[in-house]
Length: 291
Image 1 (tube, rainbow, N blue to C red):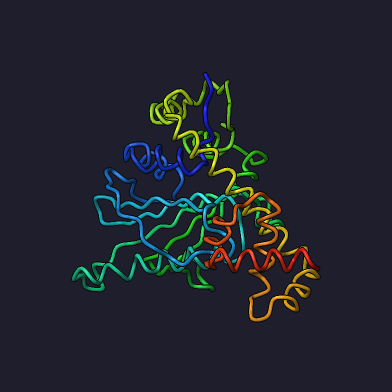
Image 2: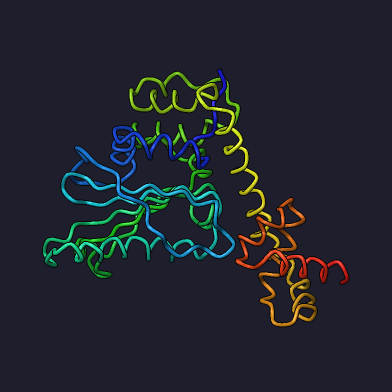
């Protein structure tokens, strides 16, 4: 039996975006809730600002529980400094929009944002679990209720001390240990019914040919975006050359197009990423070749 990676757009949405019982178990394990979720329903996705250079590497699922608390779950494959700002905007917007339904301020319910990040971004900290909320700086017991944020650095989890909540550990093992084409899964992951069901949903044989093509295409998109992010930081000299060659064009976008093309991105894909016409993308590529 071969399994697919649960962090892929296709599988993540199938497991957590179509099975509320599995999502409930996951959220109860991952979030610092004083009152567990008893029931939940899905909310439609909202259009939020894109992180520069990243379009395909963010997968989100939204839901609301029986108390009216909202939960935003995001699987983030790549990291940029803009991502935290996007998460803050996203959660704040969900919190404020409750007033559009006729709520009074006192009726506003909390919004929890859970961000699962497949990269290390806090390099000077050993902890993989980062919980943020609005607290009094002199007295942390004084809290302004409404917004809470949890960021999980999945790669760090392997080196963590596992003397924590068992269900949280097992769900994180589910996300970190099951890779593409995995054939053997630790037996303890099957001991929890919800996780066992989530594993079954990853069986490669359960997906159609077109779904598997979409699965592979997602990884290709991530590879391109990873190249864009990396090269945008390390090739500063080329930016200046592009700026001199391409009058009126943003040099960062020019570099993104060039690096994306090197990574195998098609003209149509690069046009969509940069929000330019295909003729403009071709012009930038031709100018780059003459450098």
